[in-house]
Amino acid sequence: MRNVFIFNPGPSVLPEPVLESTSKAVLNFAGTGMSIMEVSHRSKQFDALLIETVDLLKKVMEIPDNYKILFLQGGASLQFAMIPINLLAAGKVADYVDTGYFATRAIKEAKLIGKVNVAASTKDLSYTRLPAPAELKLTKDAAYCHITSNNTIYGTQWQTFPDTGDVPLVADMSSDIMSRKIDVSKFGIIYAGAQKNMGPAGVTAVIIREDLVGRAPENTPTMLNYKPHVENNSCYNTCPVTAIFVVHEVLKWLADMGGVAEMEKVNNAKAKLIYDILDSSTFYKGSVEKGSRSKMNIPFKLPTEELDNEFVSAASKKGFIGLKGHRAVGGIRASMYNALPLEGVQKLADFMKEFEKSKS
Ligand SMILES: *Cc1c(COP(=O)(O)O)cnc(C)c1O
Image 1: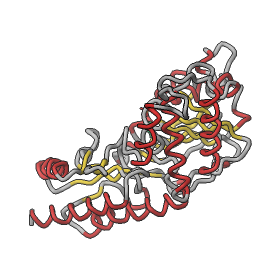
Image 2: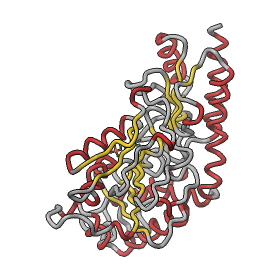
Image 3: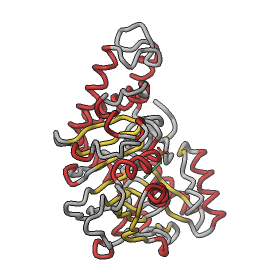
């Protein structure tokens, strides 16, 4: 049992049973006598694990059969480029919704490749809310529409996704994948760096509808084209073996505890503990409009910057790690991903109440 609660924004907390099974596999993977770090990505033991990882992800996210699942490297940030490279053909426009730091990075990459329409931006509101559906100026025949389902730094999260009709909806779900039930069939591509809700840094999941594979121009470098990755089941080159192993363990843990539906209940309970404090206190102030609030990342501020800093250092002495807000927002940010137990959030809520009392 560990004596810290990890509120890090990413890489972030992993379930303890996953750390235990991984530590065993580091010494001896699947009875091979080899470490997971030593086995071949083409060994039959790893091949079986990879197939099972894909199946588990399909099961927990209820992914329809007409989607392919890839485990790639380069982070979510490489997907910012791969998506337009594969889907933004000459003469077409891609719609992007600008909801914060990572959305703007995705827009920057797409603009290097082709034509971009920023369908809406909440930049002038310091990204404290998401645009309402009616505010989106979507392009009729867009190549795709890109959103960021959860804005890790600003603490906003789409509650209902925009309806883009026949235009494929592409979502960066790095910081809320598998945290709540979603209808995958509404999306063309879902991608996520694993290091928030799925596993360690070093692997990125891409869930791509079949008809969107094979659209890259002929001169696309092989590693930037989805098609060879699909044809080779993520093993066109050496895949991130150890990181995929950990993702497998996280998926097993999630499935064992009742899947995404159960996880969503716990996440709702965790978020309520903190938002109830923000809503009933004049000492703590949330920065996000209620309708856009994230259940994964909750930014808030105390009355002064000195108190923010004092809070972070007092909290870390009590074992609450990683609460300092992102430099773009300041204040505090509690990142409460799937693997952070309810107990940790309960204890943080108690600490927040005590801290407020000690200052009044
Ligand atoms: C962390 C994060 C990223 C960046 O992911 P990398 O894997 O570091 O490239 C992108 N988008 C969102 C929403 C994130 O939270």
